[in-house]
Image 1 (cartoon, rainbow, N blue to C red):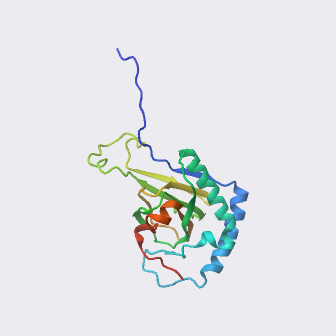
Image 2: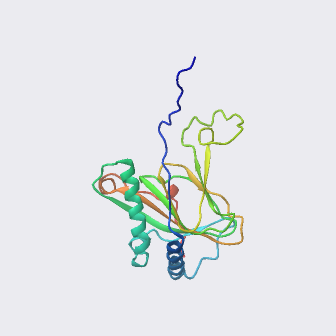
Image 3: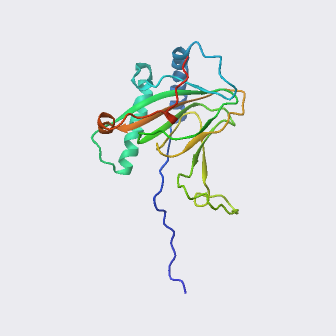
Length: 217
C-alpha cells in the first residue's frame, strides 16, 4: 500500500569537528602549554570549590598565539563557506584559555551577539573529555517518552568526545556546557567567538558567555 517513505531533517544545527594530525597537535599543544604558563604565572589559588578560571580574551592578537589564530581562522572560513553565508569580513571577537581544575565544570550557556563560537582542546584528562550540547527548541522537552536507543532524533542532549588537537565550532546561540571534571588533573581548552565585522562596528558589542566577569591571574 505504501509507495514511498522518507525522513527529512529540517532546520539542522551544524556542529563542526576538526582534528589536527597527531604530530601537529602534539607540537602545537606543547607550545601552547608553555606560552600559557608564561602568560598566567603566577596562577590563582583562591578558587571556590568547583570553580574554574580564564585568561583575558585577547589571545588572538598576541604574537605568541599566531599559529593557533591562523588555524582557527582557516576553520572558521571553511564553516562559513559550507553555509554559503555572504559577508564582507568577519573577526574573532574574543579568544581565551579555560583552566578547569579537579571538580570544576561550566553550566549550560550561550555566547550572545556572536555568530560562531568554538573550543580548541589542549589537555583533556580521560574522564574529563566531553562537551554537551542541549536542544534549543523550547517545546522539545514537554514530552520525553522512554526510548530503546538514544539518537539525534529523540535526544535533548548530545555529548561530543574531545581530545587534544580537536576543534569544535558551533552556532553561538546553541546551549552548551562542560561536565564536572572528576579527575585529579587540570583540563585546558581555548575558547573563541566570531562575528561579522559590520555587526560589531554598527549594531552591538559581542558578549562573553553569560556576560560574566573573567577570572584572571
